[in-house]
Image (tube, rainbow, N blue to C red):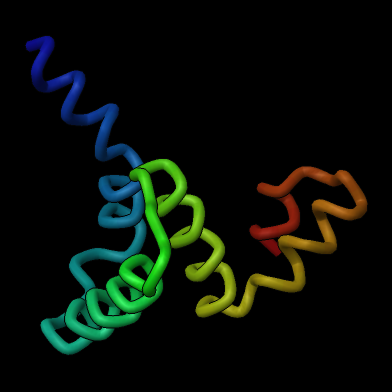
Length: 87
């Protein structure tokens, strides 16, 4: 039971997205993300740890989803990020 709880806690975001949007994605999308992320994270002279890479990917996702400006406006205004991104 403990392993299940740890698994769910570690994959909470993906589980919520799956419940919200269903199974989405394709080999082409996954390959494009692999190439895009790989190029950025493996650039000459860079070194990344998992938390830093995760933050970078979150920002890239904001930009790709068209929420970049709302995110930064909320940060500047110090409003709730959840409220800003839900709009």
